[in-house]
Each structure stands twice: as C-alpha cells, then as structure tokens.
Length: 309
Image (cartoon, rainbow, N blue to C red; front, side):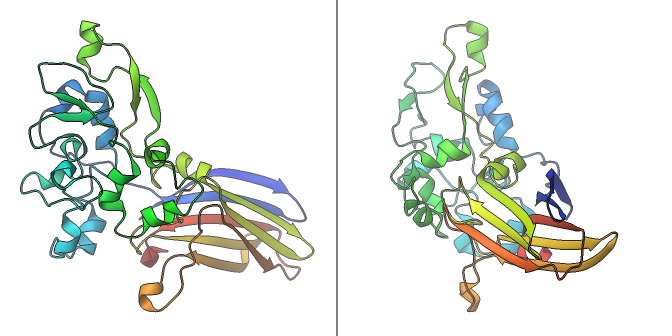
C-alpha cells in the first residue's frame, strides 16, 4: 500500500510544524461490467460511477478478504444488491444473481421491477419510463445498506440529522448539465441540476481535507495538536471497524528522529476496547512533550486499515 501526501503547510512557531493529510493511494480502477445499457445515454454519470467505491464494491480486494472470498453471506447483498425498490428504501436489499462484478450499480438505486427509472425529474421518453421520486437520494434510501454498521444512527445524532438529503448533499455534489447525452444532440432537453456520481469518500483527498481540520502549535515545551470534525455528519472514521485513522507525530532534530507519537481513531469495542473515533462536531486536543529536543514536528493524519498503519 502506497501513501500520498497532500496539503503541506509550514508554520513558524517555537519550532517549525509541518502538517498534512495522508490517505492510502488507490490503484487505477479496473474495467467493470455494467448491467444494462445506461452508459450509452448517460455517459457522464457512468464514467463518474466507474471511479467510485460503489462500482468496486464487489471486486475490491478488501471486500474479498473481509468476506472470506465471498463466503460470508451476510456481507454479500449490499455489495451486489438487487433493485432497492424490490424490498423498499430503508430495507436491506436482496443479493442479485447476475453481474455481481458491477457492485452497486445504476439499477440498484434507480430501477423498479417494471423497468421504470426513478429520478428527480419526470420526463416522457420512449427509451424507458421515468418516475419522479422524492425518496431518491434521501437518508432513508442510503440507509438500505449504510445503516448496518451505525453510520445512519451516527448521522441522526449530528446537527444535520433532520435533513433528509444530507447524505447526497455531501457525497454527491450538485452540477448543472444535460441528464442524458442525447440531450446535447437533439437540444430538446434543458440543462438541469444533476448530481455527481463519484460518491465522494475518503479516497477523495480534497473532500476529506474540507471535512477534517488539523491544527498544530509548539509552545512552552509542548506540541499541541487539534483535530476537529467540522463537516462530517457521522463519526470519523465510520462504517465497518476495519476503518481507522491515526494522528501520527514525528519530531526531528535535523535528520534524526527524536520523538514519535501515535493516536488511533478506531472502534475497538468488538474486541473489548474503546471507540476513539471523532463524533460530528467533536474537537480532539492532544499534547506531546518536546523535552527541549527537536526542531521540526511533522504531524499527519493517516487513514487506512488498522493492520497497515
């Protein structure tokens, strides 16, 4: 696993403090089979989706490992789900029989059993029936899979908890464009408000940097590090307990490492430990002694699976 470092800032205090966010770099997305022909008319949406974790939900190496090569049946249905409308938004979906390699795909969220596509607009078109849905993109819809490990309950306790579209407002930013590619050819449809289908997550470095604020200062022989959850509507990290963050502090005198400290953000309750993750709006302050040594402190947030940190 290779790390990428971004957003370096240098502050001149009693010592020099460099702090940054580091996230495990993802490899180039593989080719993924798409169920249906949505990409023919909705190429922009499909291209965005192909870069997302939803597209890799079934084939990701992490999921293969955590599901014991697909033997843990309780994990499978949310990584290759049938249409959510079959069981109803808010209920766990069924595992589909075909094209599981496509992960969480277009039909999962948009299609019903009759083949109609549910979306934000009702447009008459010969290709398929369109149904305007007020439930598409709601917290209830996302809860079909994301409630399983506490993310939805965490969200409901946050200041955004009563906003029914808060999930997509954060993870699927709005963009004005033609909904279908054919619209740009026929010039019959206006440009409309759509949403990005990259499903921004921790893999998006800029996205995470806006959500988590990292500050550091050196004074009176101590290094103070403050980590704030400013734009996260659930715990950081959230989801299955393989997700973990680490505040990593290294203090150098020239090229020599004189101190190093780590603070882990993870949920260890299953193994008898504590939940040390950041709650929405929470500010965590950590102090470390400098003991008169060191001229440079490097403070990083690492995000990856616990065993690789």
